[in-house]
Image (cartoon, rainbow, N blue to C red):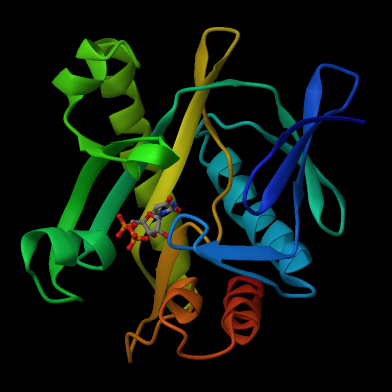
Length: 229
Ligand code: UDP
């Protein structure tokens, strides 16, 4: 298969039939690549968790790129024209939101939707819709659709997570067009979501790695165990 793109933790291949194969590698990174490790088995854990969430979206008719898992660590998806934005939905304060606004972690604040322009050299700046339009990154119509889509994703996956003992504090999605339809794309995993234990608020996501407070694989296995039970 032809490699189309090698990201920090995933590789995208052309499948040959017009679809793409997305492979979760065992790499884990934080701080825009400043911290990097390889954790054996991480890719297959994320592939399994991602499958659960995208199937949940499909069962609620939320348009998305996912077809099926095709190996332990890869899945087949529709090829989309990705909009170079990170769309973040926040239910509880955490991460960059706390730093930016001087707020403590764990406050119920949402749902709030934020847009960040994907640009590693600029550290993915936070932008408002008018700036996205002015920079010709997207149109206001698409941004409004993307915002609605992100809130639908939040409804579906936060309810599903809570039913399995996990608070969805925040998450990032990417969206793209296929045949004129805006689809949820990329991944939905503990690399891109903050999951907290419903009682203790213990982190079970990439914050374990970002903050070097434990073994991320143990956290990711626990997320998969809960979502599968
Ligand atoms: N996120 C992501 N990729 C990024 C930046 C953020 O998947 O490049 C996710 C992150 O895991 C969290 C949410 O988006 O679930 C909000 O992240 P935040 O803006 O707080 O940034 P961070 O603390 O990760 O720097």
